[in-house]
Image (cartoon, rainbow, N blue to C red; front, top):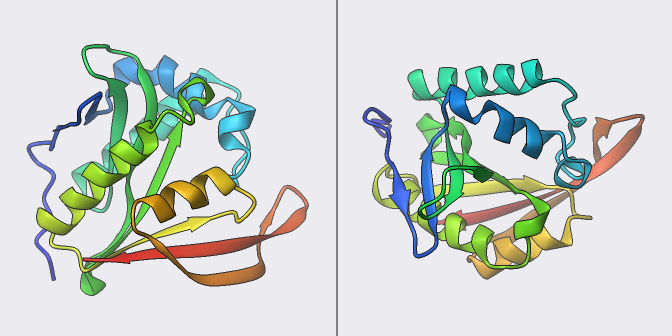
Length: 181
């Protein structure tokens, strides 16, 4: 099993981005992100409605980091403080050297290559530093943007589950993408 330890927190820089630790100071930015209906449209969770929910989500992220069971980076533009999104391995399956990647970005930053830039660095970190063998992504197949960015970063669709996810009164499909080291 890989020996995963996120202390000290691994800050990552790209050409245009800084992937950094999420702190309590980011609560308002998290609220802005996770309360946006367009951002949350394909996530399978309702948008949050209170700042307290954003604070609770931040605590969940901090707890998974302390337990080395998950890592989520805040995405900021290089040289700027506000978060424009998040990315991370929110589910790590240590015994199988596998993790599930998840990401979201504010709509005004969509279609500019930011997500691809962040994904490439995070998968490199997963394979090189965490010694993962594979990375998976579960998405709603209606989310064409997410499917496209996964394919552009080397992921391959491995599975398609019909109506396997119940959300907001309806059954939804799930597409699973995977990338091997």
